[in-house]
Length: 409
Image 1 (spheres, rainbow, N blue to C red):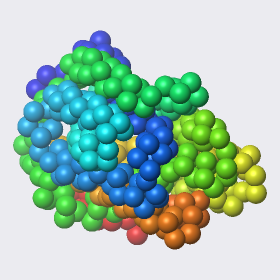
Image 2: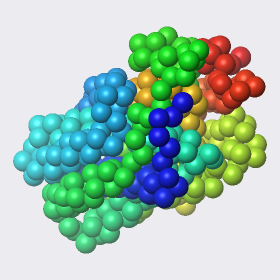
Image 3: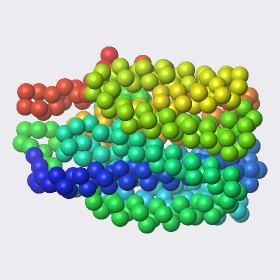
Image 4: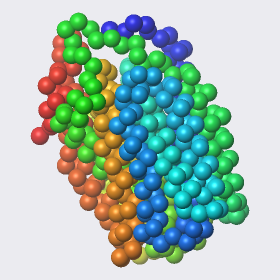
């Protein structure tokens, strides 16, 4: 039951604040990602070395993610987002300094960026499930569209600043200041996510260790991992692959990244209508296949125009995987924080595996050919997609516990 019900005005304010959290997270991350080619050149990194540097983001996230469920449960999603926005901003500022002085500060900054981003990600997704519940309709994909909108803004700004030769350090330092000033202020408007108590006779809230033993939760985590790999590799490597593999100028390489993010944003904004009409499973399976076609066009297309078309299909194909996985993890509100934390922890393993995998394969063959691994994992996502089907409910609307523990065939 709920100890207090927020007013409609409070929920609307929390909805806007949740959008702000997603947009701010996307903008901050894409601002960094848009400058990867310039930082690579400044520090004279080959593909393998760049992959290892990018690994610091994944390491920070993987430290934060298992801790984020208990932290959000204890202090709430609002305070978690506020604290992690500050940590992320410090990381971006440190990486900005590192772009001038050497690899070590960049690695430290990226670890902090990954740590802040990981816990921030879980907290804002938990708040998204709370807002969805109060609104009575599914809008999680649109929150993630807000994230993508932030990434598009960050990427386009990055492309413009590259074209005008604005220094990397000045760009990233300004982004860090903006994040600290804006995001914590909006997070104060979140709806409290500690108001729900377990009703008599209902299962107690699941803890993080229990969630790690649920087959359905683990398979949703695998599903999210595959889509996160496809999304993360696009974020980290599309601009580099376009520049090195298709031999386009640096600004046009960054625009390929922006095209990818734009397509993903469109898919996330219009996706909820498709999910409501056709269901989660058919939609994400079709999108996974679209993503495979997009990757193939990007890698094997004979001209840059084919590559740009491929980035659009790739971005559209991966658009709904992550938000659908988060919604599936939050189907039971009593278990949302723990399950979202577990699913995100598994999914973010893609950010651990992605940068070095592409970097090492790229060092042996080429970064462009290494991207074919994305298509393989999208095929895996299509195979396990049945597990994101919404949980069955009983006559009183209570979730069947067996449905939370048994994977779909």
